[in-house]
Length: 245
Ligand code: KIV
Image (cartoon, rainbow, N blue to C red; front, top):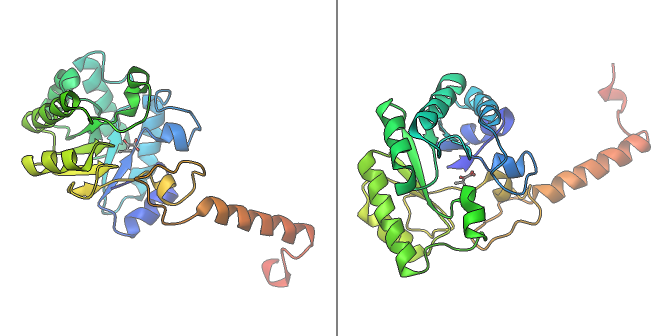
């Protein structure tokens, strides 16, 4: 799984064979420049999801329910999920949390909308935890995570993201569940992996957590191409005879 927020990127990832395109609320960070995922709205998520769905020929498209669109009560959660499905054409929604959001998950699932869970580091709760550091290192939090993972499976979630937790815990949870887990910063033993595409391609400049592998350094490469373009235009080397009518 990789994140996508716009048509062009989604098309490249889809054609390359990615199984799941996640329209993550990380769009709030990498597309809009916010410090956290909290400000992005349901309307904005639907706009991103529509663009991604237009590009997806084979990948499943999963869309994050943004902060505030599912926590207050299950009716609101259901209407947010329905808006995403109806207005974007996506295939499933993802939301953060376990027991606290049980009623919302049940309600959405009862309407026939597939739900992906998300446990461990849950960025929508950043102001509760205070840091983006590794979660569930202590036994109590690890036990709660295991319980939540089994609860999500029993409710009917089809998959589960495990974010930034010890690899041994992610392995234990993954082996004890029947539904597939998808890890980010959770080691190699989850069933799948997810990264934020802008991080993995090196478009984001200074975000370099230990779990991230950068497959390209696009910030530098795009900078270099831009400097070359500026210099070509100033030197009257662009456009040349073949590049005009
Ligand atoms: O919003 C997002 O990009 C995510 C992934 C990091 C799993 O939730």
